[in-house]
Image (cartoon, rainbow, N blue to C red; front, side, top):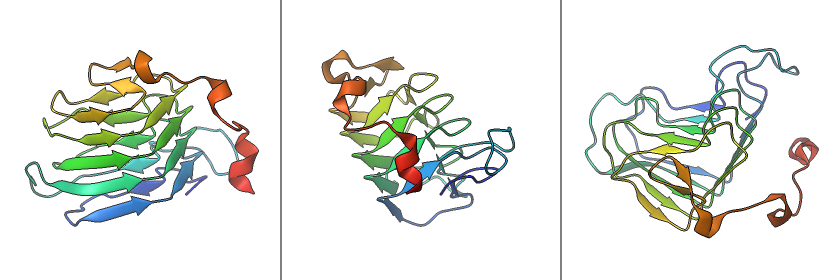
Length: 161
């Protein structure tokens, strides 16, 4: 999902269980083919849901990439449910890589990387984190810090091949 003038994948009015798997979402929120600002610019937007799903995981995102979106990589928006994230990368988004700070839900994060985004990830205090590059308190995790050297390549042109 790329060069969308608004969001890459927008799950507005979703109350079903979803799996987002092996997806790429980049260059969203711009006039297609340019970096002229257009819409919201979120790679993956997870709500709004019509009801409160308690602590049940409504959406799982796995093995996906959010890159250089105008606003955020992964955003809770109005999803009133727990969300789960496994093995994802948020790289070079203008604001947070992961923004899931609403509704006091226990989101699950395992093996995710937020790198070189415009701001630190924002999560609920109830979130469950295992081996990520970020912490609940809107800070980077020095135990799992990454640098450019940790990637085979950061060449964005590879996304378009």
